[in-house]
Image 1: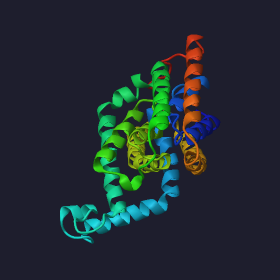
Image 2 (image 1 turned 90 degrees about the vertical axis):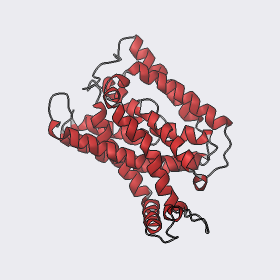
Image 3 (image 1 turned 90 degrees about the horizontal axis):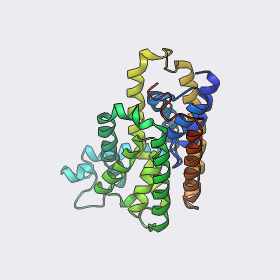
Length: 295
């Protein structure tokens, strides 16, 4: 993989990571179209560190506030009962920031457990382009339906443990390329009655532990494989990560402004259009469904 190809993939990652269109699917498709093949789940996970660093930078004040509130509650600022240490004392108002820390932990468990359990399938058979066509279509239609019929009455302050688990299960579906991490969690949030902005903000916060853990795990696992046949070299991977970070930060700003005003319909049509294009490319032999999978 050349530096230019890596920069282009980083651009694709940065543009698509936070939109409900599936960055994994785009990297898989673009890699096949450019002739570089599937960049692989390890490369994908590592450059996602770049986009999640953009999330960390954008939400740095929120993250710092949540961590400090969580630590204060654990130390007994609201009392010594287990509820008080969680941030929800019986004799006082709840600390929503302390509770948010626990909601992020609970919501991150499903993707961590399922990611480890189905790691081999995630890195091989689930990256088949026909599967991506199905997930782009099905979850695009589901997102559009959920956004159209669900009320917008709940904010992040209405989160509960049950909701955090449900959000986490929807996020875990993004282990299948084509579902979309933000698309899955936003769909789940809209079905539970959360506003578009609330679902998007929690989606960003919830993604950080999972993506950083996945990226660092893949980095440690592949540390000795950089530059070997079928594996991206360290230099191009770093280039892609930096480009993904810069572009991703800009996209976060724009996306949060868009979702507070408009529906998700344009993203639904985009997903359907992309799926149709991939079907044509597969049927004409321009793309091969399994070409490069696992490379």
